[in-house]
Image 1 (cartoon, rainbow, N blue to C red):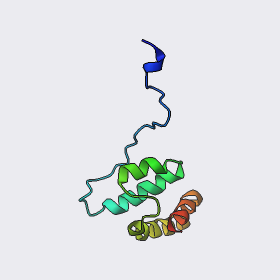
Image 2: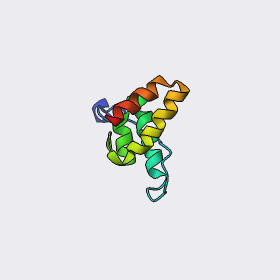
Image 3: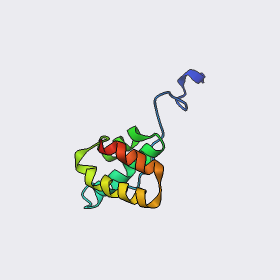
Image 4: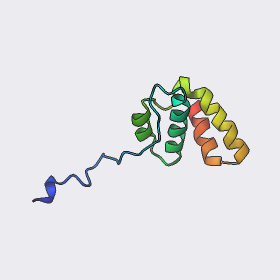
Length: 90
């Protein structure tokens, strides 16, 4: 078979990650989705997390959770998490 028909390395496709998201009906879904978005942004995979969570970067409904994570990052000295949290909150 010709290599032209194999999609093993198709451009634009990225592997799907498991973000450990609960069902959307779970009361903690938004908090966990906010964490997933920040953790994905930490490693440059925001688009994948947006698709997985159904939320876009900067979603107003997630800001209270991100504010808590920002405080935690400041206390822990996690500069990268603090950076992406601040960017989310802009």
